Amino acid sequence: MHDKPKILDGIERLVLFDGVCNLCNRNMLFLIRNDPHQKLKFCSVQSPAGQKILAWLGLPLDTHESMLLLDGDKVYEKSDAVLHIASYLSWYLSWIYVAKILPRFLRDNLYLWVARNRYKLMGRSTVCAMPSPELLNRFISAAD
Image 1 (cartoon, rainbow, N blue to C red):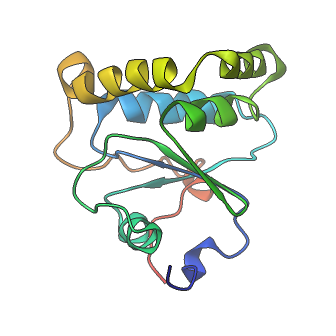
Image 2 (image 1 turned 120 degrees about the vertical axis):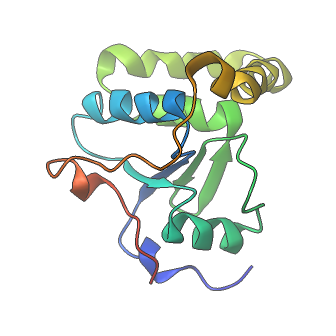
């Protein structure tokens, strides 16, 4: 793996998501509303920073079937990403983490079904949504 991109300096937890997916964008807004201590930062995989991070991780740059969570030196994907993200949310949502007891293949199969059908379920945009000025500090988008 190449050197860690400078854009990640000082970022403890980063959620990478499909920025043209309406479902993914709604999920990011939900996460922001329910992350009272602002522990999560966000980055669209289509942004220059997202592309640089995907390349650094050795992941495809053009297909995005999984939300990713970079948490310290660990990378979580699919249902593991969702469950670890839940552990940082408001107390009344963090209990979702107990779903970790379910076998990963069951959790991941459900996750992948939703991921593969997300455009059919909620549609897609032709461009990535821009965060409002008050939410701008929660997102990274520029490459270093």
